[in-house]
Length: 141
Image: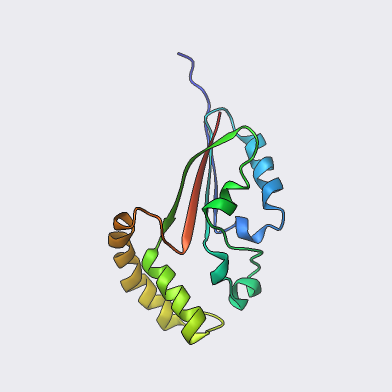
C-alpha cells in the first residue's frame, strides 16, 4: 500500500476575518493532498454579532449552514458541531442585558474559570448542537 501524503490546514478564529471566505477555502483546498483536511473554528451565530466583532475585524459569525456553504469543490464535510454552550448563553446575556461593547477582564476570567469547564460537561449533553463556537471539518476526496 502506497503511503499518501496528508496534511491539515487549520483556521482558528481566522475565517470570520476574511471577506471572501469562500474563495479563501477554495485556495486552501487546492493546497491539500488527497485525504488532507481543513478544520475551521469560528464564532457562531450571527445574532450574537456585536460592535466588538466589528471592531476586531469580523465580517460575520457562522452557523452550521453558513459554514457548510463555504465548502470548496473536492472536499467533503466530515463534521459540523458547536462548542461552548454555556458561553453562548453568557454571550447572549451580554448582548441583551449588559450590552457591553467588549469583555472586561473579570468577564474573561469568569468564562475561563467557570463557563468553559461547565461547557465541557454540558456540550456532550446537548449533542454539540449549541455553542458560541462552530467547528467544521472537511476532507479532500
